[in-house]
Amino acid sequence: MWQRLKSMLIKEFIQVFRNPRMRIILFLPPLVQLLVFGYAANTDIRNISLGVYDLDHTPESREMTEHFASSGYFRIVEKPKSPLEMRRRIDEGRISAALQINSGFARQLRTRQGTMVQIVVDGTDSNTASVVMAYAQRIVAEYSRQILVQRIFSLPNIPDEMKRPFFVKGGIEVESRAFFNPNLESRNFYVPGIMAFLIMLVTLLLTCMAIVREREIGTMEQLIVSPIRPFELILGKTIPFAIIGYIDVLIVTLVGVFWFEVPIRGSILLLLAATTIYLLSSLGIGLFISTISHTQQQAMMTMFFFFVPAILLSGFVFPIANMPPIVQYLTYANPLRYFLVIIRGIFLKGSGFDILWPQMLALAVLGGIVFTFSSLRFRKRME
Image 1: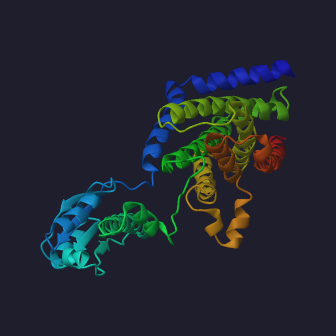
Image 2 (image 1 turned 60 degrees about the vertical axis):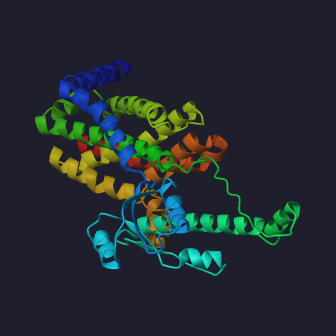
Image 3 (image 1 turned 30 degrees about the vertical axis):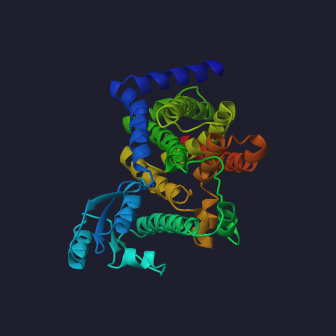
């Protein structure tokens, strides 16, 4: 048995690495895709193009504008002269938001009257618009707080030691702290997810294409009539791709940690153990696709028919909690859902087996069912 399996493994490795292009495809595309998606999948909004329509032209209005410019979120690129010009600049896409300061802004501040500024945001992208509005409201609130502090400390005939308690009394001050990702860098959230679906993509592609290729070139019949047993053929076809999957895991992990500086706080051994269970599912799905496909083109189309919904139903793009209940039930059959929790827990939280065992158990059960069913179907096709 071991000799036959060894011969099968050697044959598969020779067949995979015999083509120089295949050697490049196995390792370079995942690396390139990780770099591209790692930079593209970023929801942090910086350098928002801002237009300032200042009708007051006072030191106070210029100070307000400076608060926006120095915040790190906004970049002043236009100073429209009229509301019509401000609207045109937004329509043309030259600015994403506009700050309008009405005349009398400084006078109302000096006389301690209430005043307001207007923020006009391009709402084409609702998510981006809501983030921009939140940034603007935070900056205006900070400026308002600064004015209030200056006003209180300028009150006459009140000792300084009494002004601070007067200012603090009755107020609620929020102090926030984000665990595991203190700077709220979206890259730390997305890069581990990108690593998870790249591993699935590579192993799915290799498994379903390799077996179908044997059928297309006519060598599958030779394998069937050979002394090798069906389960030995299955192992010989899947083990090499599992090893390649492990190598890709190490490559993308090194790039994620040292290039994108994503922290890895958990155990590398636990990550490899979880990857083993994860590969069981992806290889089983690839094996199943190979049993229902007759050509490499069919296998490719079927693989993408599964892969794209798997990404959408994994929680990588859209939160699972926001999906309709019937769709949420479908996500339980998606191995990518569980592995995303595992890989993010290991990278960002440093979670151990005591925390991640429910996801690993679900992934093991799902992988065992998928791989067993696919193996039996593949064995039946051979017989």
